Image (cartoon, rainbow, N blue to C red; front, side):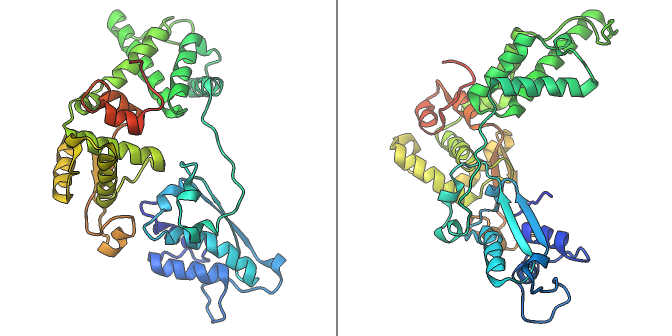
Length: 365
């Protein structure tokens, strides 16, 4: 189940466990879940019957993927989800609840409030990034699964796949980047074949002809991705624009958020901290609220960032997402943190990017 906002977790879970698949407002759904899992002395036909024997109580297992997105200003959503299992076990009534959380941020528990930390289990399973061999095997499996091909070397040279896998492993192990690079290389090869032959007549292997994607094709595709219009726009950013881009990239890197974006107040706080920590006069004083809105408009028009204004939200609800309330946009960067660092390399803002973003690199200096 996908959710747009943290409090939607209450709505979706209650819809899943309620007898008649009821849809309630977040507050009402939270109250019904409280009664369902913790139990209540009052009469209600909307929860489950409280049972005396613990073995008879139904068990609900909830898997919260990308749990980072449920971190609100007060962290009440995470607190409730991990508090209900404890109270259910202590009270011996209501449905039993097991919660498993998956986070993109390895140190998320340490970043939470003590009240939430105390409700978390002590067991952790750390999933490492894909290595070269694993990435290569996944790419081969995807090629075989796409059209039933038995020999992937009829499409991609083995060394080319290994090169794409190494390129991805050096960065972050994000398999999606390997898919993007291979897809771009294959599309470029197909386009060249069409230009040369004027058609796509299949060969004896069932494919347009015997040409395969090789290492130079992978290199060219990766370079084209790097030299995109967005990257060029970032490389010519002003001081405050670079500060905003680095702040967004740093937030994205350390929170692990891939969707949803960041609140204006969250961005302001990050920009101020980075600017004051670096001490470079070109970033001081850090932009104020109105200046930030101007920066967001400019970078939004340049398609460097994405602005999403939540609709139908009360100010208090939006404030709980981590901001200062009001219908201000949620902001996300249209590139990865290492791409932003590479785009700013060799510019007057290279020291800023190097300090806060440098880890893996797509191309050498």
